[in-house]
Image (cartoon, rainbow, N blue to C red; front, side, top):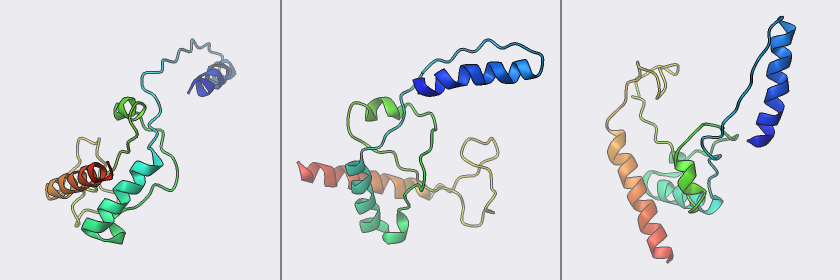
Length: 128
């Protein structure tokens, strides 16, 4: 993140100057990067597939630099964050996403997610 901030300052100033403006640039690192431990991701995949079948777990094809407070925990204890799909099946593909004030959730996803987390915890505890 500090590498990004070092590059962002001259970039922002250059863009401002190109428009006859000036820019004061300040960046604060509020959260560490969310880094999932590979073994925790594998455990989640095993649990999801055992409960719901092989199509139930989809790995992200590329990294996502979303800000997440769970990253503070994952920086100390190997862990992973899983997204549980909660869009109603009848919703169009462009339906509003989680952080939209217009989002609609299928509450049936709650027991699915709870069961997954319980299965992950049980498998981890059995690993010792």
